[in-house]
Length: 246
Image (cartoon, rainbow, N blue to C red; front, side, top):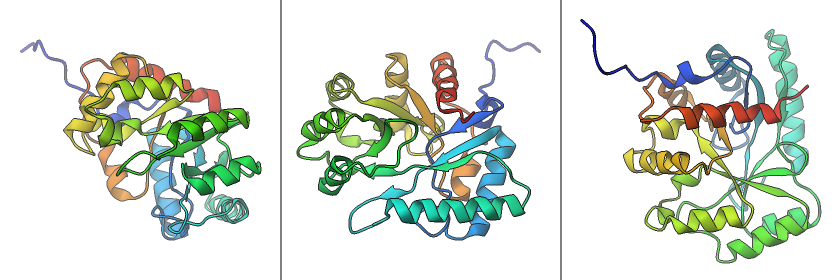
């Protein structure tokens, strides 16, 4: 029997070969992601099976919570790469950071100590409770310092859901937007999926990230994508090739 309704694909079905991930928490024992190298190995192997072939992993830097330094992150990354190679995983595996936009972040970028995704592109986030009081001053000063902010998962900031114009203001302030892939399958809740779909419709996203921390995130790649129109999602997934490591 023919059906008028085509079944939605699972999220993993939309991951192309040679996908570059720019947001994950794969380094062991450094934040709320992988706890041990065994965790890092398992997460990496599963992402590779989905089509991921390059990683720019991004541990949190949050004052008084995850006080990671550039030196600590790079040392952890170097050791992780060695251990991955011992397990026959020889892929581009880099490290940047996901910076909470606070006073410490301002001090870091003013001193030129940021770990970037590529060139001057830096991954930033906000508290889920409220935006920084001086958000637009921070963004202005960041741009003056020569950086381009890539805002992680804007769809997850609930305080913007009833004021869509704030997303427009962020774009005008120079923010690029990174969609969390799991937002498209309802992992964080239906309201977040709806906001993600709206932002996609309006062409406001620039890149995607897995934001993988643990096994539950991996399992969600088996869920069906809840978006009506898949084309905008496929386009921004392909945009991640911008970060391909030659």
